[in-house]
Length: 474
Image 1 (tube, rainbow, N blue to C red):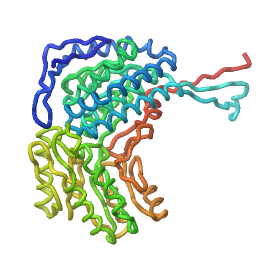
Image 2 (cartoon, helix red, strand yellow; image 1 turned 45 degrees about the vertical axis):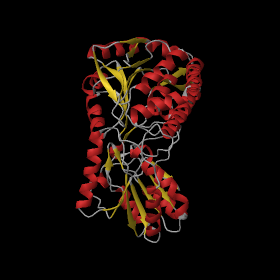
Image 3 (cartoon, rainbow, N blue to C red; image 1 turned 90 degrees about the vertical axis):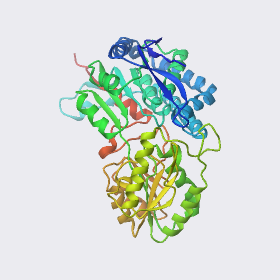
Image 4 (cartoon, one colour; image 1 turned 120 degrees about the horizontal axis):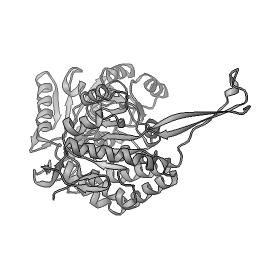
C-alpha cells in the first residue's frame, strides 16, 4: 500500500518512497513517502496560513473537533491497535492499551480547550497601581513543529497534536520513520472530524531534511520533541528563539524498602520492566532492593519474568515481541555481553531469537556499565542490593537522567525523604516509575529534557501570556 503526505488537507504524492517493514517478520506493510525540502516548505506554509483561522476559532469549536475525533477513534480502536502492532511490533494487547490512552488524551484535550484562561491582578498592591484594572490572557503562539518517536506512535502524537489544536495552534508533524501509519490514521480521522485544512500536516522522511527544515524555519514558533538527548541538544542549539519542549528518556529506577510485601508488587514491577519490550521512556531499568528482602524479590521477579510469552505481536498471548530494529537487537545484546564480561550475572534471559530479545534480569552490575548508566531501551532490568534508603537514593541520583523514579515503602519518613531527595521530574510513591496517566505533568530534569507534557501543562507551553492593563482615570 503506497501512502501519501498529508499537506493542507490533501493527500500528496512524493517523488521518492521507501518500504516500511514489520520489525517482527520483515514483511513489507506499506510504501512510505520521503518528503523533500519543498514538501516540508508546503506543509509549513499551509500551517502558517491556517493559523489565523485556528487562533480565532471559538474554544467550543476546537473542543467539538476533538470530541468528534474521540468518537471516531473509539469506533475504530481495534483497527488503530492493529496498525500499531504491525508497524511497531507492540503486542496487540499493549497496543490496545495505547489506543485507550490516546482516546483519553484527546478527551482531556477537548476539555482543556474550554478551560484556557488568565487571571485578574490587583495592581494597587503597588504604589502607582491605583485605579487600574489588569488581567492576563493566553494566546496561541503559531505553528508547532512536532517530532515524535516510534515507541508510542499514536499516544505521543496525541500529546502534541491534542494540546496544539486545543490552544488554537497549527501543526507540522514528523512521525518516526518506522511508525508513520499511526500518524496518517489520526490525520484521516481529524479531517473527518472537521479540522480546517492546513491545521495539521504530516510529513515523513529523514531527520536531516524534514526535521532540519522544521527546526530551522522561522515560521515554526515551537518544537515539541520526544527522542534522544543527542538530537534534543541539537534541536535546542539550532532552534534559535523557538520555544522548545524536550522529552529525552531515562534509565528509570525503583527503590524497594524493607517491610514490603514482595509478592504483591512483583507483577507490577515485571510489567514496568518489559512492557513494549522495555521501549518506554520511563521503563523500569534499575531496581535497588533493601538487603532484608533482596533474595525474595530477585527469586520472585525472575520466576515471574520466565512466565512471560514472547512471539507475534498480533497474538493476544504475546507479552514481549520484537525490538524496533535489528540494530537495536545487536546493541542490547552487546551491552548485556559487556556487563557479563565485567562481572554481571544473567539471572534469566540474555539471548536473542530473530529480533526478539529475551526478557533479561541482571545482577551484580556496576554503575558504570552501559546497562546501568545509559538508557537501554530494551527488555533488560538490573536488580541490586542496598542497605538503606539513603544509599538507594544515592544510586538512583547517580545518573545523567532524571525523568521519573519510584519507591515502595511503608515508612512515611522514607517516602518523604525520597520525594525530597530524588532528582527527577516525578516521584511515584508505592508505584513503579513507569506510571503515567495522560493529564498529569510529565517531564524530566538533567538530560531527561525540559518542559512538561500533560494536556494542561502542554497548553501552557504552547501559549503566550499577554497582560492587559486598563487605566480607569482617563
